[in-house]
Amino acid sequence: FVPNDCVLNTDSQQEIIITGPNASGKSTFLRQVALITLMAQIGSFVPARAAKIGLVDRIFTRVGAQDDLATGQSTFTVEMNETANILNNATPRSLVILDEVGRGTSTYDGLSIAWAVAEYLHELGPKTLFATHYHHLNELEERLPRVKNYRIAVKEDGDHIIFLRRIIRGGTDRSFGIQVARLAGLPNPVIKRARELLETFSQEKLRGQSVDVAQIPAARVNQGGLFDEPVPENPALEELRALEIHEMTPVQAMIKLEQLQKLALGA
Image (cartoon, rainbow, N blue to C red; front, side, top):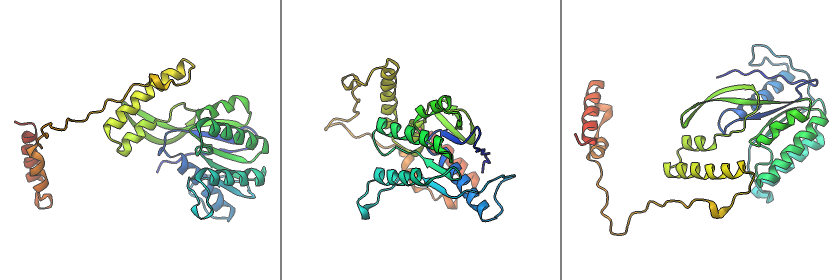
């Protein structure tokens, strides 16, 4: 577990905008703050080295994404209903937790809603944590006096990323979506194609132009012919499947691994 500090006040840091990759710990940090605040309200000890927590009248959360089939509400409708409840009932003594508001609709509609919600909460006054992938919201720090930007620290190692789980000062303009998709196990051809498309979209954005679909490079489909000979399977795979690894000693396993490596390389 990586501990993180959180400071919210009514003077200079009433609303925190948190950016960072998926699965990096943004939602965990939001839930942590909400749960510690709730525990403090009932007089409980809290999992922190030190805590100074004032009274709150309510804790509002808009976290997660799911539809409501029973009432015929889409994911976005559920999200907007919960957001409306927060905006209509929060007070300056409330704690508001928002996780990726606006993601259930088109990019610009969602960004516009998220921006307007952040502005409204700043004027309303509740202490707010707002996690988002809309990096444009980082600009609010320059516009609104009590908004501050934070991000999840990430270490890059070539095409790989390492989540450090630390909340640090400052915004980010990257979500590392393709790297996270790679970690999730998407096939390499999909990752390669996504990188190719990202490069095209990024260049269009830098030129200040909308994406011209006609200029998107065509996908190179690697499909064998109907009468192509099947590629023979490496013989090392068959031996590997037949191994009874639970009956092998460490020394036997090392010897067998060396043999399989030589077989796989055709030595």
